[in-house]
Image (cartoon, rainbow, N blue to C red; front, side, top):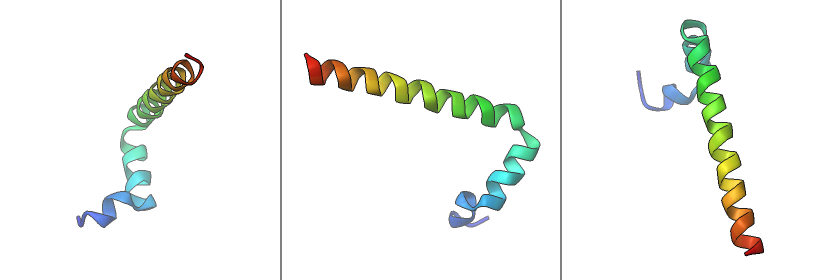
Length: 47
């Protein structure tokens, strides 16, 4: 599989069909990192 194919919707759809829980954990992890980054940014902005 070419590198560009890894970012296509078909590749993500196939991955989700094989590992639906992994996708949920991945999205949850992204949300946690985003919330921590926003918290650090706000502390820096207001501090």
